Each structure stands twice: as structure tokens, then as C-alpha cells.
Image (cartoon, rainbow, N blue to C red; front, side, top):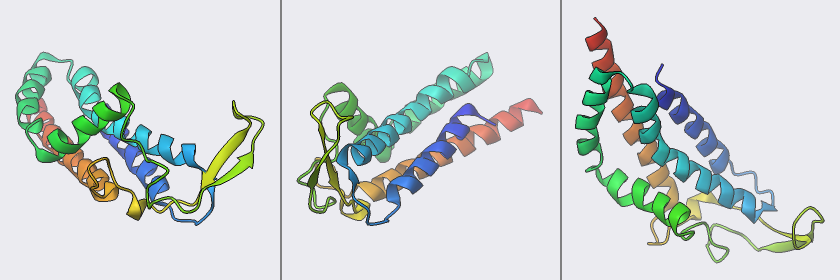
Length: 163
């Protein structure tokens, strides 16, 4: 199994947890960190594929050729790459408190936090929007479908070359 495939399976699990609607108020930072982790991991699928799964020369050549095509796909160029860059390189575009995805925000005493309080809220992922106002959930799902298709293509090519 490709390491990138194992990573994508893990991302699917994270997304399932992110989508869970239990109507329980949780720390806002928990929801934000889940989103950031999913975005970062979605972008790193390509890095793991290239740097770990394609170290042999024939696989490396195949992946370099495919990367040119994959980078041109809308979900990659308009969501995965720029969202990762905004979150991790510019620290913007996270799930904001003003978002309709969060219910009423409450402040609770929490001695484990640096300022002694936690902001908690219920969260509805179906209402979450990115900086451009686009719903987040369909984009996350489309990104997983994109990587699944790319990895299936690689797995088929690598099986064929192994024969």
C-alpha cells in the first residue's frame, strides 16, 4: 500500500470526526485545529506520494509527469494549495468565530489555558465557509475524491510496471 494511501485513509477518518454533529459545545480551538490539520494533510498527500512512495527512478519519473497534470486540477489549484498556504503560511482563513457554523460562543473557566478561559461553541460543519464564502465540506470531500483518483491511477500504473 502506498504511504500516501494510508495518509488519505487517515484524512477520511479526521473528516468523519469533523463532520460529527453531536450538538455538544466544545472548545472552538478544537474545531479550528481539526480543520487546519485536514487542510495541511490534504496538501501533504502529494508530498508524501512524491517523497516516500516514488523514490525509485521509474516511479519518480511517472510522478513528475503526473504532478504537472494534477496541479492543473481546479480542486488542487483553487482549494487545496491556496487554502493550505493561507492557513499555514499566512495564518488566515481558519474557521472564524463570526461564522454561522458556530452557535453561541460561551466562555468557560479553564486553568489549563494560557489566559485561564476557553471559548466553547456547538459547531455545524454544514454552515462552515472559507474566506471566499464557499462551503467548506463539499471542498474537503472533493479534495479527498481528487487524491483518491490520483492514487488509484498511480497504484494501477505501478502494478502494471511491476509485472
